[in-house]
Length: 178
Image (tube, rainbow, N blue to C red; front, side, top):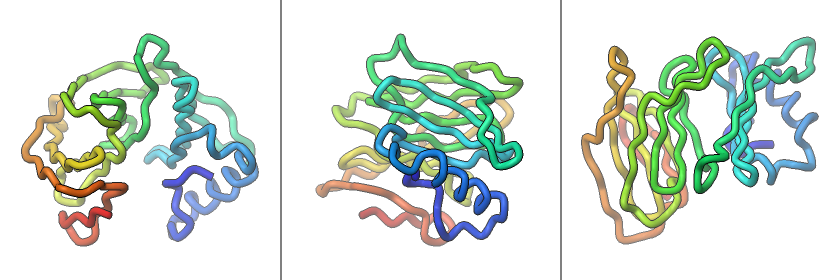
């Protein structure tokens, strides 16, 4: 199962998806770097080895492929993702963030932000106060999302002296880094 479809999610649709994900991807979890439930009820799977992204619908307890796209022109595939608003997804990659619109089963690149960091973007999370937090190995960067213009802009950065594996929001905008 993908690491970010949480066991303790109380949403009934999420529980239903979780059961199906465990049935569909029981032996092949390492092929999918990330599996997440989207706001519109679909599920997204990133295969970072072949730079492929698949979006499924769950119909009668079967996964039906709804949208598939690849990043074949990219140096690397995406390593993480965060749904900013319904069908607007922020993909983290090696040294860049891509804001992508997947409405109407089309893939539109809205914005690309490149970094000079020499490490993978490990996590991207949406915070309850409207900010977005991203971390690589040693930095946490904050962004603000402009819903009207479908753009993000950097608003702050914290450089740490230790290795960051993961970040979580613990209380209305406060971040725990481990």
